[in-house]
Image (cartoon, rainbow, N blue to C red; front, side, top):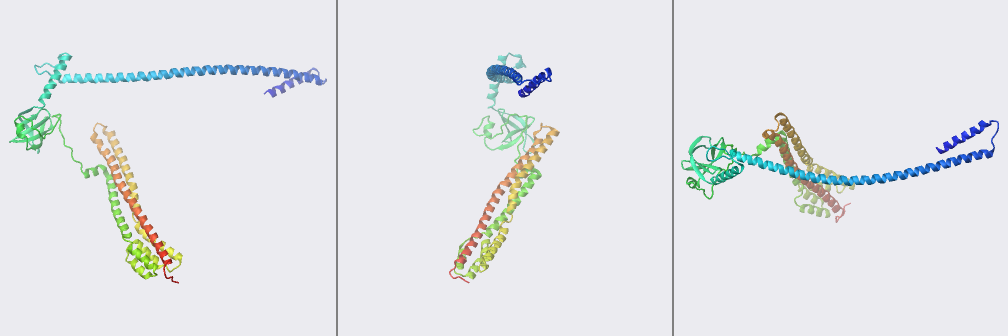
Length: 443
């Protein structure tokens, strides 16, 4: 910019010189003097701009320092206010909890007072003062506690196990248990709803003590809390109930598990048949090979009904051939035996991998059915939701029950298979080395 400004000023000066006298050419000294004046002007202007710049930088630096200091003060003040706010919020929470506790105690006290009634007259507790109400309530509670251990007897009705109504003497153990005396036999009762009682079990011992109003040392009875609420015995859940809870996917997982168990047994039988039980015959066959008795070694190996024996028998048939043919024969025999001992191995591992996924699928379908029921009926009845939740959990359980054993068995059988393959290669190589090192070389 400064260069452009100098060029413009130079053009103006030149134009003014030419305007005074176009025909007169300026002298060199005059032109130099004009340039010097312009340079002095520009230098003074530059100095003024530099001074303004320094003054502005100094002013800006002071303002930055002041703003930084003010920001630090505000940040410190904000931290103090935040700490104070946390303390106040904690105090507010304590006050709210204290208020809730007081409110609960007040409601509990009012409920207790409403339930308490005077034993004399028809007055209600609400008509008395607070202290009198409390004293009366605790007195009645103490009397009720004392009566809860007393044995009382009076005629009454009850229902036997078949549901038929019976009459007899009802023996009450406070307000927590009842017994029925029918023709000299005593039965423990349980609430069946509406204030009625039903036989829970017949007692052989301690009946005489109950009839006399005494509590024996040992007594079997049904302990209840509310005689108006019917007790329903929980049905013992069977294996078939669990399977039904799993739905269709649960049955599919079960079938997969049974199939995996069957083919695991078949694969184990194949491996046991392919694995040599003893190595004495194999050692004897190698000794015959070292003695150049190939026919004797072949006879011994033919009696070995296992994978290693068959591979060695095939190896002996090609020992007198070229090395490449011998190697090809050994590989062919090993591949043939491997095809048999590898059977069903992949299927077991696939089932071990698919079973947890099937369980996850059952979990998803169970939750979908649960949400469908919630959409239709809401969440008021938990029994309606139990079906979908049971399917979700049971199928996951079945998937893991099938997958974990299948994975362990599959890995064990795979390791055993690799061991048999290693034995086939090892004994085939040992046979070749024995033939090379035999005592009498055959051309």
